[in-house]
Length: 366
Image (cartoon, rainbow, N blue to C red; front, side, top):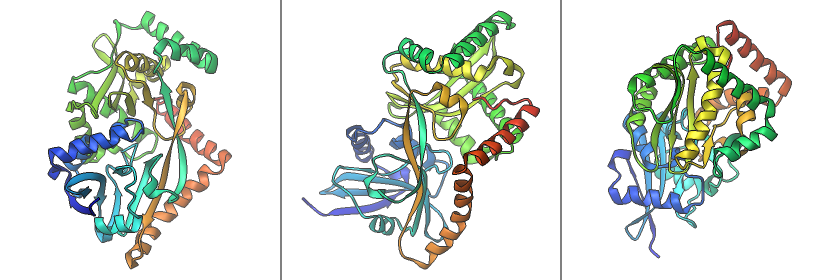
């Protein structure tokens, strides 16, 4: 076997054979086919984030490993799409395990930060500060089997949501219909406007106020590739959208990403109605798993059938600049961890946000 060689390129500089090798490595990895881990997501981020890079390992001229990242000043690195990507890490052939220091050196980094590292990343084993549950919905046996499970697991939630779905059908001024894969960009603009308003009402930073995120979402909505396609699901009353969700799908996984709804229809819980219809639509489309993403939420607890685990942390190598990045990151991370480790305090914080949201007409549903 030959020696490994590493080169660093911009995502758009990856060749067809490298992109195909990336897909093959992911397919053989045994990990869930999360679209955030496919080359098409990195390519899309690279088109809006000029500092995006990919380190490519090759052996005897064949690509055997990929590490996508974003390179900041003073050797600081972050996971590709940090802040919006829900699954992160490297893509390596089994047995290829470069040390973290060698990896960082090859990338010109002294510090690499992640917040949704997927399980099964041996290169970064033991480096995480915290682990988090990422709830999932399994519809591999079909929607009927999933609904039967909810009748046992979350009977009140299912009964109430189905009743609101029926009530909406009776009282709505127009036909209630659902589109699993809506291609109309106007519907996406409506979703983004709802989500921006929700961020503002609940005191959170508006992600769509960042041009790179809004541009990325629009481009992914247009993208149609087997491993990473944008899917916009919309619940309509007549021609009026009342709830919508934008996520990414592969052949077998739908990664849930941006849900929102029209507050005027809040009494019908349209976000929950939408999620049940999304589960049915995903099952019909051959998707076996809906990944609801990291983060505590009552609706996720009601909908989920299981959980994956993702990790947050950073890896470093000896360098004077490392301390600067660590000091910048650690106080914020420690404060968040302090609240999460104290359920009563976390519950009060969530309730304060929920109360503020209700006063502004937002019930904190998806």
